[in-house]
Image 1: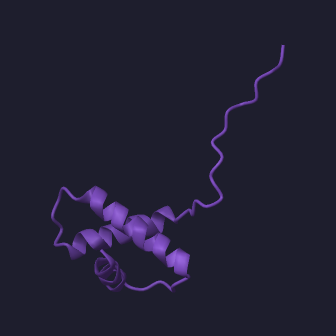
Image 2: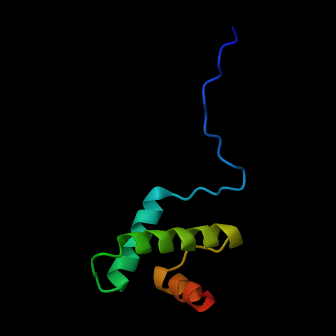
Length: 76
């Protein structure tokens, strides 16, 4: 009988990882920029993730969230 290999979840090479601390900090900054209105935590988190991934993709040096947020707003 053949032994089964343990299941692993290999990450695709195209997947870029972002720093969780930077992600949380940026999401909080977006929350504050929006006036601290509750109920949009997922939106803030996803926007922060999108901003950080865009930064990595273009190797843009870290800037204030407000500058990056404006750039992304222009694209949508």
